[in-house]
Image (cartoon, rainbow, N blue to C red):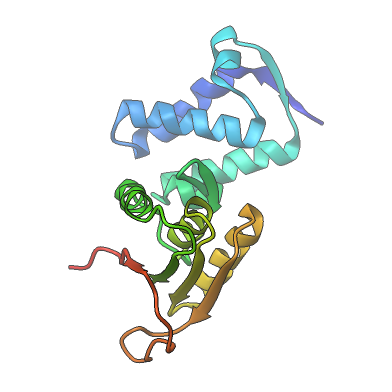
Length: 196
C-alpha cells in the first residue's frame, strides 16, 4: 500500500535524518532534493507547493536504503548509481572513480584543440568511460580506443557506451606492464586518480 504524505514533510524527514552525517547545510539540502527527484520524481516546485505524494513501498525502501548508505558516508553518486558529466548521465559504481569537475575542463580543452574530423584518440585508465565516450561524441568522426586495468571498470564503461550510443573500442591492459597496440593516435589522454 502506498505511503501518503506531503512533499515538504518527506523533504524535512529526510533532511533531519541526513543532516548529522553531512557537514554543510546547503549540501544536505541539495542531496535531499536529488534523492526526491531520483527516487520519487519529486521536483523542487512540488516541494515548494507542499503537494500530496504517495510513495510505493519500493520507493520508500529505496529512500530508506539511500539514507542508510549516505549516513555511512557513501558518496551520493554511488548511492544513486549515476552522475552527470558533460550534459550526459553516466552510470557509476565502486568499480570506477566518480568523474571530477576538472575532468570536464580537460575534455573541453581537448575538444577545442581538435576540431579536425577523424581524430584518433586513446584514453588510458578509462574508468566509467566518461572521457572516451564524450570525446567520441563531441569530436566529429573520432575513432576512440580506451583501456583500463580493471575488468569491472571496463564493464561499467562498456555499459555507458551502449547506453549513450557511443562507439568506443575498449581493451584491458596494465599500462605499466603491457605494451600499447601498434597504432597511431592523434590524442592520448589520461586523467588518473589522485595519489599520495
